[in-house]
Every structure is written in structure tokens, then in C-alpha cells.
Length: 466
Image 1 (cartoon, rainbow, N blue to C red):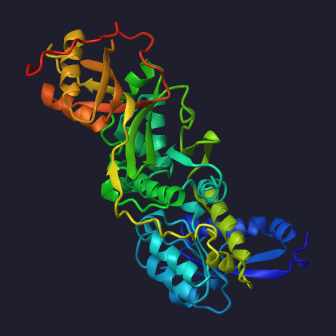
Image 2 (image 1 turned 90 degrees about the vertical axis):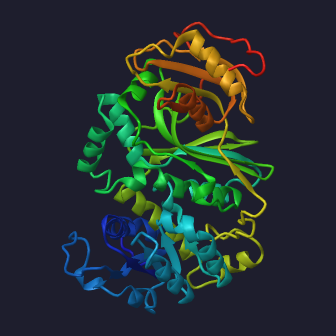
Image 3 (image 1 turned 30 degrees about the vertical axis):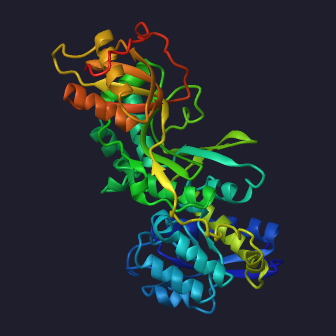
């Protein structure tokens, strides 16, 4: 079908033409006819800023569009929408700021920048009646930010919990399925193109943390500082952890979660055990999934391809089409003045952390393991009673029961139930036995567990005894 019937042309200036940027050029070309038919517009990439204009590019990238000066792109009069695909903080922030001040709408997938500076940039966009759209920053093709921003009006969102880093999820999946070590699975992920040469941001939880910050601002209107989130990655996960999880019918996943209640923000990024009844149990490989919990709709899972050139480019092009609604008009700018959210360039007046307290989320169950050490210092009912007593003495914890787990994958292992803070449980176990311990919160399962040792209900020791 010809695009001659398109009412108007939307001209895109692209900053960066790596994997994502080249994907945007391809996605625009692939969707050209259907966009013209459905929306009455024609999308066209007219300028592309790159660091090295002589670097080889895919055939679908026209070399005549390339320039090494991003300022020429963001200020060009023939550009309506700027797509930032450079990544990082600088010069991405300068480029977006100049683009907005030059009257352009901006689309980005830069979660690092949006996590750090999204509130300021969104307020700038709203103040001048422009769009700053970043749905691709979390979940790639999964429209989680769009849903959080536009669907939940009558519902009160209680909590968010999800798998948002495809690299970590792929590594854990391969460790589980093939019995690989972390190092082996990481090398496999790098060979497959799922992990960077320097994987620190992914495997240490920094990428997931940035995405959690974006999710929290979108869902709750709160800007959460990085030091307000309990963060850990997967680099310390051992094959024995995966084997223990599998023995109990669980999976080990890298999970982000946040709840907001009565001025208390509980946020966490780190490994967790999920049971078959958990909505995240089937999210494997490079896929992402987000569970949104609200008072009316209950728990809803949004899942799909959360990484890769095509899924990310898909989300970017969809955001460009949202920006189309503003090109040549002031529909959303007027809505901004009346208090509407204006897509993801939303008001963030409630985003200040002033008066807000931060803490690690509690868990109903925590698995504690001690490594195989060739001695008999730990284990069984006696260890469970001692752990129970030490945990019960901790302020802020409600310990109900401690259950020994019969396993060949650790010197000793227990399931602790109650209202628990996983890191505190781990610290107590480490101090008690003076060896490194691991602790993982458990989601989606009723305790005690089938196949576990007899449940232990220790009697509290007299006050003052240890």
C-alpha cells in the first residue's frame, strides 16, 4: 500500500546508531505502511548523529544521513522528534535538554539517565509543552511504563515486583538448566550477545536498580535514591544455590520489588527464590516480567521480550507515534496545564524524598544456607533452635518458626518464617557461625515444605541466655 495518503510526515533525528539506533531505523522502515494506514502519518529518519561516520553500518542505514555533531541534529528545523540512543549520562542529558529547548519531542530508552535525571527533564518537558517519552527504558517491548502511567486511575497500586534484567535472568536460567557455574554462564551470555564485555551493571544489579527507580517514579511519583534500595547482584550465586532451589521445586531469580505505604518505601534488588505458584516462575532466559499489585485488579503480570534491538526499537517507535499527537498542535501541552499526566513526561511534584523513609522489604519466608565445610558445627534441630533464638532477639523481626531442610547442597539449611528482613537474617547467621551465609527471600509458596525435615518449633530460651 502506498504511503501517499499520509496526512503529514514526522521527521526523526536519531542520536546514536549502534544496536538500538540501527534497530530504530529498521523498525521505522518495517512499519512505514501500516503506520501510514492506521495513523495517517509517515515516519522518516532524516538525520543520524554518530561518533564515527566511517564505521561500517548495516545496509538499511543511509550513510548520507550521518553526522558526527549531535547538536546539528537536535537543533535542525527539519527534525520533529529526537530519539536518543546514545546511552549514559553525558552527553545524553545535554542533548535531550537542548532538543527540548529547541522545541523537539524526545524519545529515549536510557534508563540510567531517566533514573538519575528523569524528574528534572520531565519537568522541563512539561514546562515548555513538549514530550519526553521513555517507555523503552524498562522492559523494552513490554509496555509496563505505559500501563502504569495510563491504566491505573481507579486502582491503588500497592506493590511492584519483577524480573527486569534479561542478562541476569539468562545467566541464572543457564546455571539452572545446564548446571553451569556463574563464570561459565556469563561467558555463554557474552558469546550470545546478551552480556557486555564489562557486565558489572547487569550482574551486580545496577541496571535493575535504575529500572526500579524509573518504575517507582512512574507508579508512585517518588524519586528513590540509590542508597535507599537494598541492592545485590548475582555474581555470588553458586551452583549449589540453584541445586537447592531445584531440589525444593523452586527457581532462583533476580528480582526487584517496591512497596509504598504510609510514607515508608520498601525497595529491594537481589536474588530471590520463587515457587511454581509465583507469577514470575515461568519468566526464563532473556525475558522480563513485572507483577503489578493493586487493590481492585489484584496481581497482573506483564511479560515478554525485555531486551534486544527489535523489542527496544519497537517501544521507541511506539513512543514516537505518541509524540505525533503533539506535532503541529498543543493537545498534550494543554493537558499538562490542566494537570493531566501527559504520557510519561508526567508531573513529579510528589517526587521529593523529603519526609519519606526507606527500608528493605520484609519476607514471609527466608531460606538460610551455610556452606559445606567438612565439620559438624551446624545443622538440624539444634542449629534451628539457636538461629530462632538469635533472630527473635533482633528488633523489627517477627520470627514464627525455623525449619531444617534436609539437603546435600549445603552443610546446613533452614527455612525461617515470619516477618523477616533477608539481609538481617543473613547477618545473624554469619555472626552466629562465623562463616559466610546466604539468605534468599521466598515468594509464592506456602510453608512448611513438602519433603523437608520435621518442622521445628523451638522453645524460647530464657532471657539473657545465648
